[in-house]
Image 1: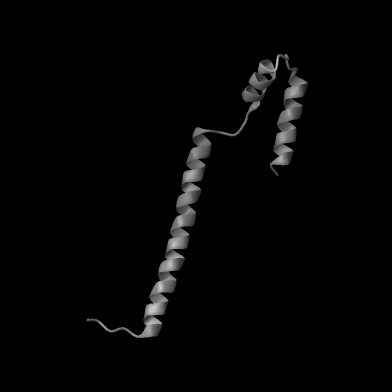
Image 2: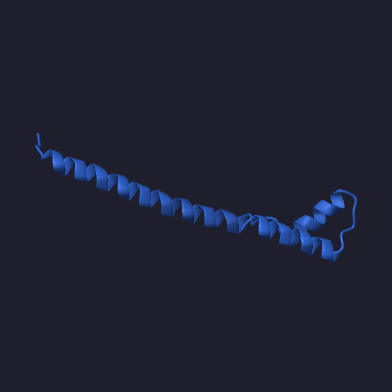
Length: 75
């Protein structure tokens, strides 16, 4: 059996945790970017469809206003 000092064992544990956190962060970031490219957030076409489903014909001014309101809310 291999005997290693306690301080060395603790350092290995700390390094493994830091490496796991870094890998998890960058992995999740990559997956999130990929998912947002495939399924972008709400755009003008979706807002227009939503208005039409409510039985209204939206003007371009209304659509721009909703888009701007959503962009302001996301900041």
